[in-house]
Image: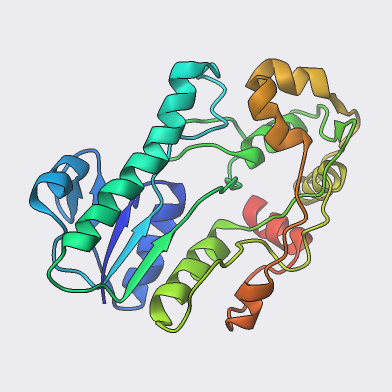
Length: 256
């Protein structure tokens, strides 16, 4: 199968690329610049969809990047990076001479990165894991209070695995929630304690909500201070078997 992922050079995209190629699939990325095994978004807009069997869109500006102030300009960039790329791909797919076997859209991912320090680059954007692990690895506060929410957790290998699973099973349709089956009710406090245990360090003091709002801005802080109880019902029913179904095992593997 020939697959064309948008945003395939990013953090999740690199894992998906490696997995797809290990399964014998061909991968051509869509990125800002063209090159070997990749085409640019501008080239896609002008020349249309190259010959392929499946398209995935992983593109999107990192919402939680604290080096960008949450203002109208950045908000528009966040929306545009997702909406416009999806529109570009949808048009290219509609105009393509050969129908696709699969079209997968990834949206709303807050992923955890295996790094004990905060680092933000175009190819390896940060996420919740950066924020918590930086605090814990510095022997500082970890558990967010008040209002520690229920949140879902999924590691990069499982997220890539779910996408690959969807691409290789043509009968699948609808939404596949990318969250580990035993983690939908994980609170920030529990996450911090589990992470501290995996790192072999204490989680002593709570991070006050005002500090999170100060770093990320009021609107973005909602993603860390509030949560949703998401379950992977359809994902499990589709036949996908999670590599890391629980938080403890996932964090131990990541920090290892």
